Image (cartoon, rainbow, N blue to C red; front, side, top):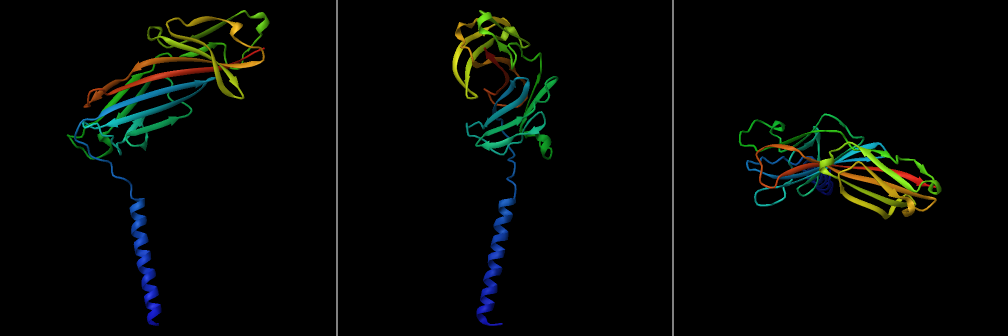
Length: 241
């Protein structure tokens, strides 16, 4: 074996060794930090109902006591691990939505994920699901004859009327939401009557009802301004003929 060959083979060996080391570093999972201080946690759980198809979209933000965003925290929604998508920002989509009855749970910095540590600060939250909002009219796919319908009844069930509802109607053009033609916010009734003169024949419209289901019950050790709540949006599309 010539000297040049030996040098060449040695260079290949060094490259493989360095490459293997870099690969192992890339593949090595980021360690979960052990935080022995309280956290500030804000989280919103959004239940979206589009024509009876339900999904959850959950977003959580975490800061330390110096107001720095914290990464690497094990966060869960209904025992499903949330993704750390940006600094201090965690989220998950559950589609189709489950459960739609019973209790929702949230956790951040869950000590059950690691060895017992009495100083490990965790935040837990739960919320019992009450009656969900359901649109009863006009339902998705309904066709409303404009000439014989001077008034349109918009109705729904569920939720808590004491927490109010926001009601909107939008034009749909080429499958996309367009101009808002109707708005009533902070109403405590579950039925409204809409003058159909706001509609145009041959158009598709989307009814949207927004409702705040309220806060989660939070336990554990956490900083002030920690809050977690659940909202719901229901939508149905109908046609004006």
